[in-house]
Length: 294
Ligand code: 0GY
Image (tube, rainbow, N blue to C red):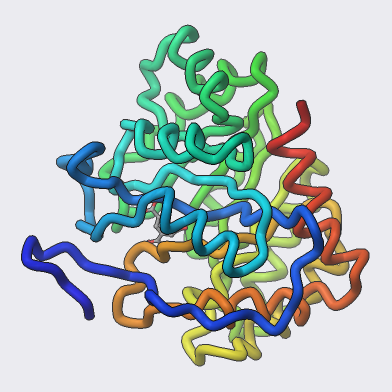
């Protein structure tokens, strides 16, 4: 683990490999984050991890190295509901980044409008107990109702063990839903395992639930080439080609003991989306529809 003098950890490799897979023109990294810089944008007092700075310059350097054109920057839990670091990165992107915010449910309509002007197109509801202290479903639903007028969606992060208890909440959300990392199934169960089967039932319950087919590094402890992840996820991409997104998850919060290789992660794309048509939907058409509809 790489820790600096302030005890801040680094969870990303400084030398990702160059992917063998060539991304299509206009590809969007639809799930990534920025951390700080801390001196400008301090972390939340409630943050559950303390990372080293991973700011816009490093993110855009990675984007160019891997061959992406655009980023969707998802507000990370370490910044709480202070979205300034995310907005700062979007502002520096020359229109090539948009974002997903985390908001206090008491946020005003005027503040939501300001986020929209800053490039935000969705809000994230995080249900991981190791990342957040509380996840008030009733108040999240109020937020979901209030963002409808902006044409936004919600991004929901939960793990497979609470999928059943999430169902009434998800059914009540009046805007499109994007589920992070497929609700974190156990990919070792295979494509027809209990976790994937339950997740497919959720996707079948509404036609406006999307998912990020992301985080091979979190879901497949065997590491590259992430064979269990590929085997479990490839049929999902084939069956829901218009509702899938892909992202690096850089700078990989809380992955400091692994340091995922972003080049190897990009190389999984050709395995889970084996045709140019599927790759174009996953990497270009779908994220453009959700984040750059205007
Ligand atoms: C992810 C996953 C994680 C962290 C966060 O906001 C966050 O801190 O999302 C995690 O630790 O599983 O998607 O970045």
